[in-house]
Image (tube, rainbow, N blue to C red; front, top):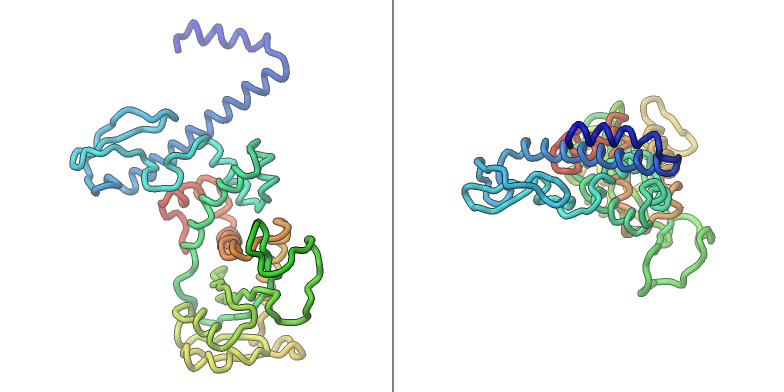
Amino acid sequence: MQISRFERLLGMLAQLNGPQLRVIKSKVGERDQLEEVKGLAEKRRVALGACPHCGGVDPWRWGTTASGQSRFKCRACEKTFTPLTGTGFEKLRNKHKLIENAACMAEGLSVRATAERLQVNPKTAYLLRKKFMPLLEKHQPMMLAGMLEADEAFFRKSYKGLRSGMPRKSYKRGTPAMKRGINDEHTAVLTTIQRGTPECHIAILPSVPTMASVNAALEGAIAPGSVLCTDGSKVYVPVGPMQGVEVHSVTSAEHVDGPIHVQTVNALHSRMKAWLYGFKGVATRNLALYLAWFRFFDHDKSRRTWAGFVLDSFGVPTFHT
């Protein structure tokens, strides 16, 4: 823009009323956020360092997209690409909303609260969230070792959003379960945590955990020679020799037997349930995604920074698993 036109624009600001100034401020904020997204996308291109189509390392600039994102053309395969080619964000409209959406996810906001902040339809907010959530599952730790704790948490089965094929008669939210104790009305979530670290392994089990299902969930998740502390459940006793770990159980009456306890994993379950409560019911088919979301941000506070979260979602490893 020419300096004279820019000075004229500045002079017109004094003539704007309150609502007009808010619109100008909003547009400037959107532009700033879009530039930040472009910068993060460019970091992805530099980190990959090659054409996403053929792996060629000598592309040249080939204009820009309609949203202003840089476009490149590979000299080897002669195909064009952008820094976000190969991601779920490539053809996303309103990319500037990725910044605020990442902040909403870090705060654990519901779909409606996110939609209100982003000023979009709740369906749009949900679809935008779904683009981030599968990428969080990659942060499941490869293997836990040392002093471990394992226990199950149980969540009421939910068919939220299911329009047909309900396995039972629908009921209003908050209706108490028909059965007490461990039963097929609930989903079991096995959580194993490495004491002294934030690392935890989360797995979905059948409604009633068995030795076979627990052993399958822990296969490859805990290192041989570790010590596994559990509650009084008998399903863990035969799992010990199968996994090559030493199992110690503490009953609810004993609560704590020196270093043998499950207080750390119980505290994790308390945070998990409190976090999930804010969503007013999570569909069971999406429970694994939400638990991966919880685990990612519960790991440490550094992951709550939107820039690192967005860059990690673009496929550039930013945080250690």
